[in-house]
Image (cartoon, rainbow over all chains, first blue to last red; front, side, top):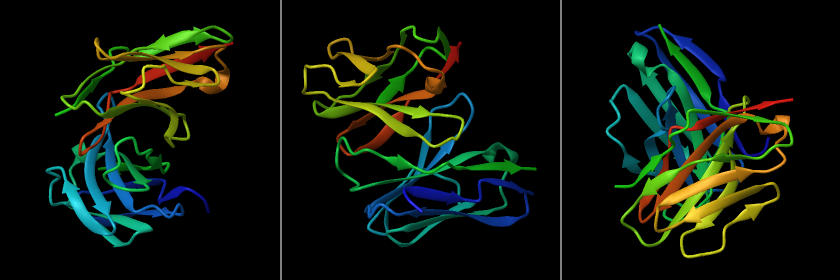
Length: 115
Length: 113
């Protein structure tokens, strides 16, 4: 595996379910990100981790819970979601968190549908 | 706060022709970078081109070039000799200060034979 991989590719869940999204980066990067992509809206930054420490949380509801056990893995735990949470969830990584001009490397995302 | 605006939800171009995608931005920082990312149907976003604000020369990557107008805060992407594989969603993005990358809403580029 190379780059940034995300699983699952698609996920359908009910509002009372608990599920997790997984992201793994094979680039040796120190920073990882979760973005939410909804139709006709800019990508929304959700969380940023730098060296496994959460450094940014953009007012995301508590029903989204991130976890970064090491610099290569990032999870997004989901529980009691709402239909408006249906979106494409993208994971990304970069060499460092604070480098202006840093390129972000993205995974292919998880398309989430909440019924 | 930094903002990025893409006013063209969709653009169309024929193969071998040239198309320009528009982007305007706003930031109070003097040191910043601008990016164009491409998101094909596979959904994986890929960096197309990057421009540093301090560099006056417009960035170029093969068929892709930018027109960076700093005073006007404009950053357009020109795709020359368009190919079917260029069909994708294109996002303009801005990185400045301690802010993480901020994206526009995107422009869907359709390429016809």
